[in-house]
Length: 374
Image (cartoon, rainbow, N blue to C red; front, top):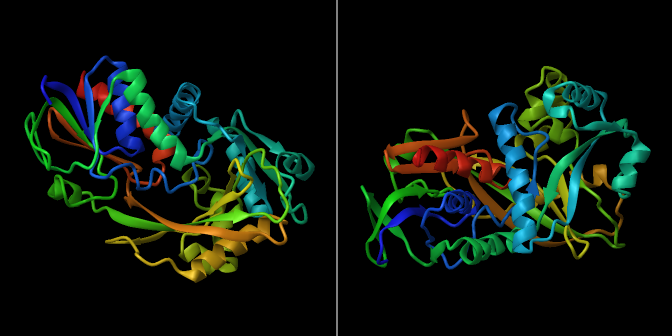
């Protein structure tokens, strides 16, 4: 590469790009090395939903707030469209309403508010009003189209911040300041490895110590028969029982017990509803969570059917049709939402281990770079 680099980042997903941005903003000379011709993993196979309300209380929620602010800056400068803002979480069960009310009393809920059903429909007219008790409005969230946004972030880093990229290149070993790759060695003062759900290429013994699993999820693109407007992202009672910012509240225990009876198959497959809108009017809908030692290679029609059953319980959109299906995978841990390991003073191994990379990655990147170049 010629002159010695300050930092090599392995992986061009959202976590790697976040580390690269944080380092570039400190004036560091950065190279991102990616094994594929472009980012193809979890960073593009998601909702593009930068979620704040519902994130695990404490440091992770703070990461989400900071990440949302960085996304707003990057989107404007990189020409990334913010398709809609905020989120609406209707509550159809009294137990879900109780969780919503409890959330509003926490520090995380201070900028959120309770909506009447009529107010909720003003944001998202396709919601089912029958049985809706109330809804939570969160003003914090942003929605971008991930498959378009991630390449634009990479191009912006290159053009605006001078970050270099080396695509179609596999890093095979890291020893001190020497990074061995399929295209030859690279010298850099520091290295941050952001491997996504690859547990075996770099530092496999260190990764194994964390007992990580692979989470496979299924997602759908749904086209309404009649164009409808989503002024916000939508979640549901199932989300109140799954997202830690809600589910860790004492009031969520009763909701979870009821959902375990009334929606036991959905709960067993980790299904909870998220629906966001794209620029063409279609909806990205999901998702499920199946855990194992490897990705599930085959999507299951039953899971798609259950996701759409959850969708139809919340939305009144007759004639809607599924026009696209895909699977995503990410690293998952039972005991943490992020993993930052230190193989050496100048090396970090970084993963988001709860599927929230888009929502928390920029802040995590700043934290990693701050410790690496302290």
